[in-house]
Image (cartoon, helix red, strand yellow):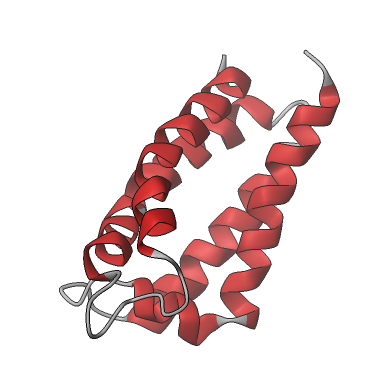
Length: 121
């Protein structure tokens, strides 16, 4: 398999993982209200994204990292649902994100899961 898509895929998670620390408050707003410890969960998910993104580039670890990314994508799906459900409302979880984009992210998760699965095999 060509390595360029792997580097692109890994960079998505590395960049997003760093974003969790640079824009913590923005990511906290995406957290569904029923979850506790928003800041800690944002930092934890950012650390996991960053670490798995890096490990995806290590040939011996890439399959395990891909399975971890699949699990992470499933785990953060409620935040994406929360973002979509509140988009266009009076208190959107992600101000400035168009409702169309917020809803489009939901099936995009499936595409990302499939992409990760290609490296998990």
